[in-house]
Length: 469
Image 1 (cartoon, rainbow, N blue to C red):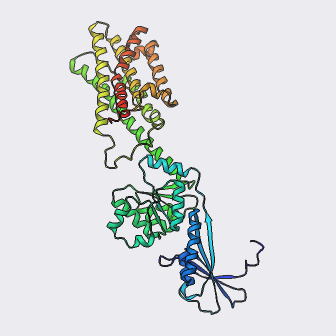
Image 2: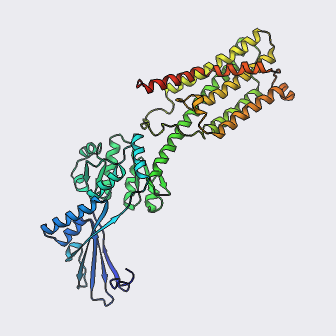
């Protein structure tokens, strides 16, 4: 094309007739170097170009067949036309020119390789994907087939314009393709989806997409080819303009939400025995178990577990096989609250039993404190491991990598060993020396405190497999 004589670098662009919702075509008026000749070039939707050219029905039918054939191959189809003008005063509208139909241009925009898999993952996660495009209906359907969207129902922009709001709300419940849509209709579709109680994420890149991006619950702008207005109107900006990145973000969000709940459950559970051990001896007139130094060591385990170990926990295998959670549901349900309290109470019962038996046997205050505290540390680590997953047992989660977790567990065991076997620290913690059999008893008691929760996971897993849950 660079050597063709049809490129006139000395011609001047004198006017542009923009695209409008009444006519999906635009024209540019070029003036020749002599200043006496004007050439008008038009492009747009094929039906709009055919309207400008006043094509007879037979010719229009032939063009429609060609459009459909190109659209079925997934091409975006544009019509092009030209006109000449000799007068100096240009008309106000495109219809005032005598256009000559030149033909059709088919542009192929291949679907990115990961999009069909991403769409499939969306459906498994309970997320419905809707295509809103200005393309010809056949093109939209062809692309939808390639990416895995239902193609049996399509609504065009002119059809949408004839629907009342209530009718549109009914239509959008099961229709996934909207073609020949003008910008203001995108906003109307977003509002219709939200009126049905949907949580709407809208993607776009143009200035005309800004109202819909702003109105959506989550506006997602394209960072690569998106306009500044679109990026400023959106809640999120994709740096790679890839739909698959949205699905990855959803998966990451679900993982973060799960891990927050796991950390909250663990915090609630571990503070039940801490509070109980601090209060019960005071109320019953027994020797104190906790001193400030004991609480400090516990917090050195609890804080990294919540802020590092649980945060680094990988997503559950079924994270994208669940429906979206109810946005009105509380962050921490009564069911989760009850299980967390039961975890904490079971640890409290076991730990207080160790302390009571130690005192009853006359093992001394320092030895009873050392046994009780060691049991609590093991139970604490058991709670961390148990709350990594509420569906998989501790043994099943061992195959899931989380280096941060093992740093926390290893650090806790090292600190505990130093507190028991380093004389200076043992005196600081008011502990007695513990033998191997004592450590074994504490370990068994600590693990026993969370065995019921592990059994509950197995029971619930069997019920899910049998279809009971």
